[in-house]
Length: 100
Image (cartoon, rainbow, N blue to C red; front, top):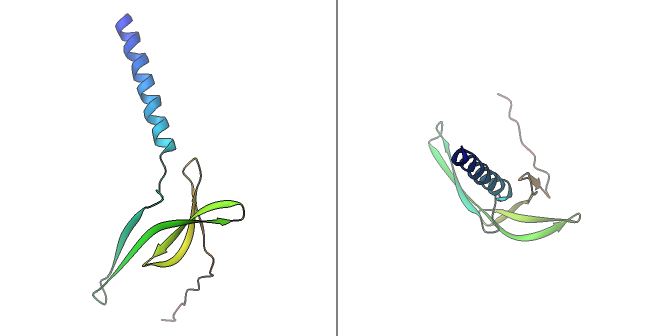
């Protein structure tokens, strides 16, 4: 019976350690980078876009990380302690709709 109690206590401690590690692990690091390949099957084209996080900026008392797309500033990202990610776009993006 004592072995079962000890095993349960060890399992609970291990589970709580793993759960805490998952909560505190950030989604993005300060030097994250990734590549997105977009395929257009109608025109047979590929578009390759490289994103990277590089540098910080202060926006309204909050610290944001700068996100670059193909070495051009794209937006700013902020991650909270509960791993929620917020974005800030400094330019208004317009999408042109075509009549078909």
